[in-house]
Length: 166
Image 1 (cartoon, helix red, strand yellow):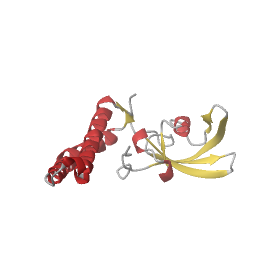
Image 2 (cartoon, one colour; image 1 turned 60 degrees about the horizontal axis):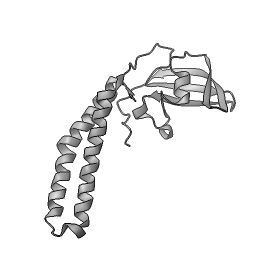
Image 3 (cartoon, rainbow, N blue to C red; image 1 turned 45 degrees about the horizontal axis):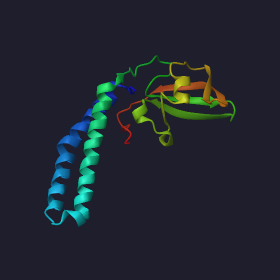
Image 4 (cartoon, rainbow, N blue to C red; image 1 turned 120 degrees about the vertical axis):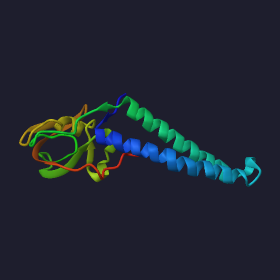
């Protein structure tokens, strides 16, 4: 599977890789050395915890490197009244007679609690590329869906959005 990432997503991922290699890796190796110096490794909890942290960091580095290597780069540019990546979109949900606002983002930035909806989610797929005033059907699963009208689209900055940690 290829993640769809913007150039800015890739830049942020590469910054995290660099930080993990230059800072976190050195700290983790030092922690393992220090814990090893405390003696008997079979009963040394600090040593096992330090090794676990070191391995977790190395695993994250490999994961991020694979993500960048296999990424499909997508543009975050869109028309003025068209829904695109990094746009904040206000929808009128007909069923609830209410407005909701979301920011459409790539998969690695998705966080529904913060109102950031992935372009791979049912909602994201339904509204991506649509224009203000369009009525769209959001198919949630095989037995449920709902209609929404796109009310407002705003270009927003993605520099503060974090890459999701797995």
